[in-house]
Amino acid sequence: MKKWAIIFVLILVGIGIFSLKYYTSLLDSKDSAIIVNKHYPFKDDYQEKQKLVQAVDHIFIGEVIREVGDDEYTGKPNTQFLVRITQNIKGALLGDITVNQEGGYYKEKGKLYLLTYEKFPLLKKDQMYLFFLTKTNKGYFEMMPKYGSVLLNNEEEKLKQIDSIRKIMGEK
Image 1 (cartoon, rainbow, N blue to C red):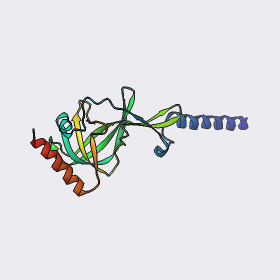
Image 2: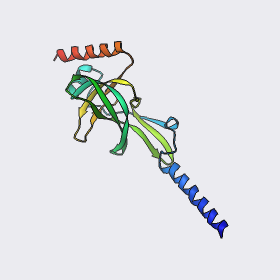
Image 3: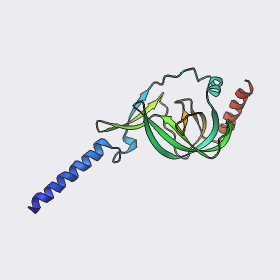
Image 4: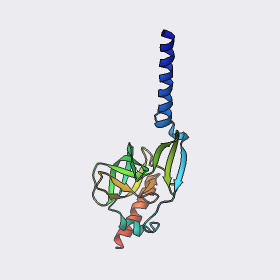
């Protein structure tokens, strides 16, 4: 009788581990995710910075503090990040805000995938970016793929980007 109870418990544990692995990302390494890149249907040509500056509500320099969640919108993953605002350029935001980036990790048929748009990677913790965001009624700010953030590697880059945006804003 004890032997059957032990076998039964081992089978249940095995089913539990299989279920965790197959249906959740708890046991998966994000480094092993299969990257799926998709085209994003932009409403305009945002390669022209003037159009981008006019299309967004807020432009600022900010540091990514951490990933704070994920959400599914129209069946596609979105990832939210806590961002600390360090310098406003357009708009007036203070402190920490939540930024939504379209794309993120999802599980399908037991495999972990990373959805990206326009080969644009997810934001990275402890990195400084120039953000172009639009306010939403969902409690976070929306970042457009590819054009919604610019990674700033040093102070010189930061000053150059700020100067470029301020010149565009002065041209209006």
